[in-house]
Amino acid sequence: MTLLALSLPASGPFVNALTTISKFVSITASIAVVGVLLAASFLMEDQHGKLSAQSLKLRTVAFWSAMLWVVFGAANILFTLANILGVSLSDAFDATMIRSFVTQITLGQYMFFQLLVAIVVAGLVQRVRRIGSAILLLILTFIGIVAPIFQSHSPANGSHSLAIGSLIIHVVALALWVGGVFGMAILEPESRAVAVPRFSQLALWSVIAVVISGVANAWTRLNFSAAWHSSYAFVVIAKVVLTAALILIGYQHRKNLAASKIDKVNWSKFAQLITVELSIMIIALALGSWLSTSQPPVPAAGTRFDAATTIAGLPMPGAPNITRVLFAFNPDALFLGIVALGLALYFRGVQMLKRQGDQWPASRSIFFALGCLVIVFATSGGLGVYAYFAFSYHMVAHMVLGMIAPIFIVMSAPITLALRTLPQGRTPDERGVRGTLIAALHSRLVSIWVNPIVALALFDGSLFVLYLTPLFGGMMLSHTGHFVMDLHFLLAGLLFFHVIIGVDPNPKRIPYLARIVLLFAAMAIHAFFSVALISSTTLLDHGYFAQLHRPWSVDLLSDQHLGGSLGWAMGEVPIMLALVATFLLWMRDDSREAKRIDKKAERAAAMGTPDELAEYNAYLAKLAVRDESDN
Image (cartoon, rainbow, N blue to C red; front, side, top):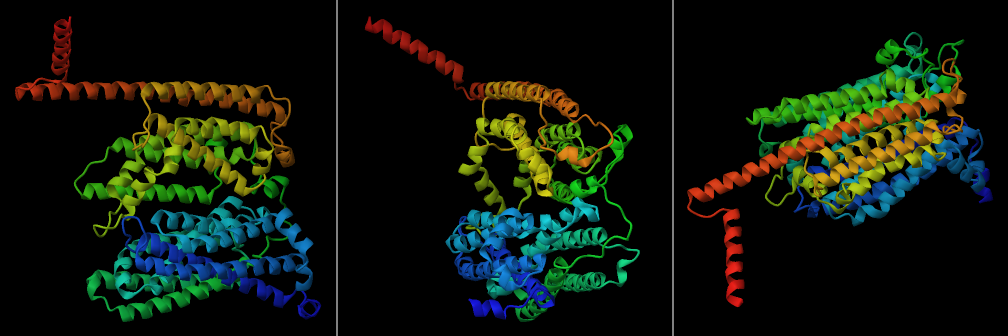
């Protein structure tokens, strides 16, 4: 070990190169895992929800790719540690130093989390036998891939939410695109013929996301007035050229597939084209790895950054007024991307129904658009901006995300639309995307989530866990925590109002009386929480808002009390609206049931058969006659 330590180089260009190489191999291996799982769970045919024989063979490729991810992920931690501290690799091998890096430094924690994900994926991938398990493992792989990205941009560079969010979208879309091409490359020709049409659609969406997110990320990182002569900018330009070449190749793929039937495609030339495409993608990934380990051009000298920019990632806004709250905008690219994808898929589904001659209520489309608009306002609009700087605005944004947006989304019936438009199985034995969604809706996990007690606990009970513990202050300090909070508010609200007033399928629909009781319980719990905030004597943020040094609304405790009051007032209104909607739905269903019974009675009378009421009366008469005879 001593001889090895003496032979290891000190931190410098060589270690920088090792860092770039290890990161490149790690990313490439993780994308290969994505490609295999994507091919197994989505591109290839399944057998009643189980992986096909060809998909089972691919698990070996996924396993060795995951092992490569583990090895080079661990190496990347060591090389990154040596680079950060400016020490030799032998010093970086010190156990105490490594332990401190992965437990106390945020970047080290994210990298170690990614390594743990890689280990879990490597341990489970060969045990996957069903489509659902493959999808869950694919989601876990994506979480591991994007985890370190949350620490890849300095808030002092500005546009923190735009830079982080756009980079996450860029990496996810790139993983789907490159991973899909890798998956296509390792498939046998007969399996490739089945997978190509579906991957072609996925690749188109991925390319659009890669281009838009890449442009947005470059915009935040480059100083356009002075950075174009830097090596960083040259590499960005090289990536743009390579991406353009890949788009041309993808266009050629789609053109050839459209011009000939799938069974007449020259798969030999197709494989050659995929090989070229994959080679270009590997070069682009290598350039991206270099960019991720390089510092972008720093801002011009003399540029000042206040505490707000350093901590919150955006400059301190002026004192809030109606104009600023309505028109301020700080793009949260991750939520913008989610909303844009949701809108595109929703209205794509509506158009598909129209082409099939079916109608979709315009009111539902309006509800979905309004829900998405509310989400954007609460995350990227003025409300989202001021939520970073004042507890009262944070609480209003919380109420909007958790109670107003979910009502619009739930009433738009997105699951029903998906069930009517998602592709079905390509063969009688294939479950398909639609069948997989149906299986998920009837799974044990979903049945637990839609349990009214669980929905209520997540909707209201989580408030006490978040705000009355140190969790809130810690989450506000990081972009990850802020995103997770907003996402939790939205998902918990969607789940709760789906149970109460949802028009989508629900495996455990509860009676209307139980829904009313649940709403009153939610109202009471929310009121109790709001009173706890109003009567609090200590700050719940553990110093976060004090560090911002905002010049307006300097009484932090009064602002916290105001947040409790606003949360109470705003929380009661949506619940009351949901209560009214529940009564209306109850009356509508009773009216439908009465009409159904009347129509059934009319049909029975027309056919000369007694209806249910007549049969019941006759049954009672027989019982009376039998009792009299017994006496």
